[in-house]
Length: 447
Ligand SMILES: [Fe+2]
Image (cartoon, rainbow, N blue to C red; front, side, top):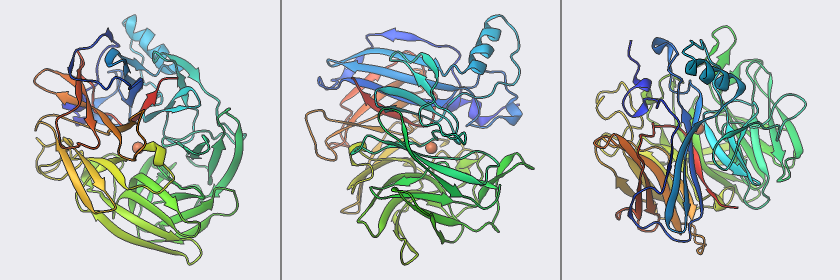
């Protein structure tokens, strides 16, 4: 039986490769020094296709090292948790490893000199080395209650602290955890949930003074062993002061949120730009919804959530220049399909347009957008922002993303100028292999 998340631009790759001195079209800016890393699920090829979903499968990180205007290497590596390492050894011996508990497969971030692979929920991240080999589970941010990081842990660029909103299935509370650059938990605050039905707390919003959590009607129950949409579940926005204290819950109409572009506050009201939809949402079919970019203005004292549309196009994978994370921003970036406007649509009316193939730059001050489209059959996911090392303006930098080239059967790392967004890429680094569509990543400057 076929499965769309095992085919085409999603199809997993079979081996880990290391390639040096990659060919480049264009010019890599000479002062860029660091690694572009992106994480995604890459099943070991043994799971039952009829039961497979995109987010299942061992994590695999794909990275390009850039220095002195050169692409020094490309590496892809499975995140070798004990289970995945054991399964890979069995496969080498020709044995069937059976069911393999996935290793972290959602995101890869840099924090205080560490490279961390992040997993959905609240479990331990895995630390990766400079060359992407797995060092092991990282106890950074772990609390006595068993929570640590989450899929979208965020670094506050002003303090260097890592903020997480971690949740564990069946636990009646989530935790906001602040971890300082030395790796010490400096604060952990419980966030009570609605009983033991755990909402899909995939992402959250962080401003200078607040943490905002989205208690959505996509809830995990032990009976179903899955997330399911429950229209009777009271949707809420939770506002927690970063300094600790009680969560203020604001009831809202049912909604689904995939990701937050950024958030900031003026001490009284919080502005959150987010990708949301009315729902119902199906965690196993993210293409069935068409989420839009909206701005929510939250007043925790008056108890109001003002909701306004910023861009009607269905889109996802929003990013900001991370130097402006938690602070007022003007620009944001996301992924769309320019033909039908559908993000990662899979079984939609146009199955040939089954993935995003364009990036959008939003000027949220002027309400304008620019679109950089790729070839019809190209596939592009999230783009990460790499600041110009000698610059400082919010859009002074580059967007980096892997773009599939079906003709070549391989992918390019595409580097776009954020200030010349519709112009030709500054550089295309030609990888010898394909990078499957995946989830999230970052530009991590060299030490
Ligand atoms: Fe995500």
